[in-house]
Amino acid sequence: MTAITEGYVREAPRAARIDWSPYLVGAGIGLLSWIAFAVFGDPLGVTTAYSRIASLFAVPVVGPEAVAQNSYWKSMPLKWDYGVWFLVGIPLGAFLSAMISGTWRLELVPDVWKERFGPSVTKRFVAAFLGGVVIMYGARLAGGCTSGHGISGGLQLAVSSWLFLAVMFATGLAVSALMFRTR
Amino acid sequence: MTTMMTILGPVLMGAAFGFLLQRGKVTSCNVIENQFRLRDFTVLKVMGTAIVVGGIGVLLLVDTGNTKYYVKDANMLAVALGAALFGVGMVVYGYCPGTALGAIATGSVHALVGALGMVAGAILYALSFDWLKAHVLNVWTLGKVRLPDVTNIPDIAWFAALAIGAGLFFWWVESTEARQKRG
Image (tube, rainbow over all chains, first blue to last red):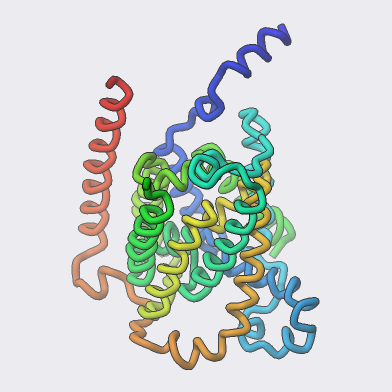
């Protein structure tokens, strides 16, 4: 029995084993938004809470006085509010889903990256780190991310959020075309 | 507020979000990169459905007095610049902030490295906030406006157009994908 299961797992292509339709998932996120609005009065979002947590990491880097006096963190101090607990939940849910579907796997260099830039872990880590710096700086400057602006703002027909969606996708397409161009 | 509402509530909401993101395959760097390369439309399918389903529900909730809008400020220059940086970061990193947190829990080590980059990005933003506030965040500010406000086109027309537009687009994507699978 175990042998049969293992054989099946080996043969099945990994992606094919998560078989939820993307439309079903999108509808689920939409439904989750109803609850977020009606029950909690706090739309889905990630980066506001993320920058609250970042102030904790900033203390050893720039010193506690600099953090305490920083005007941004004054307006957004570290507190264990709805958004921060929401962030704690995201990895828990993703972990659960990966475990149930058997899709948990250690990934150092993703396939698309490997095909284009080779198997170097260092190269991928440097790019991921720099990409992380840029994406979070951009998210804070814009006032939200794919969740806060893209989904929560998009569904409210917010002007700021549709500008965000348009510029984000246009820039992403251009950068992707440059990054993955074939010589 | 009870503990249930202040901690368990948001953790469960986050977990549901993370679960859905993983089931929707958008915690995969490959899926996100291939969206920007126009080879995989999963990201748009999830986001489009979430916006239409979420938006119609939230519109009804607002109209029946069960919630209100939480619209982000339309500081048009800051949103445009931030979104452009976000697009660059998303393609280089291969994740957006929310999907990255989910990906870490499914075994993506490079997502974790990028999450440290995101902490650095948030710190850099906080340190440059005073300058941005004086020079960027105050340019072309429209306030918390929604598309129906600035266009005088009612909500229901926007959602009808969005739903039909998304429906036609996804129908085209699905039939193209089916053709590619056959050929």
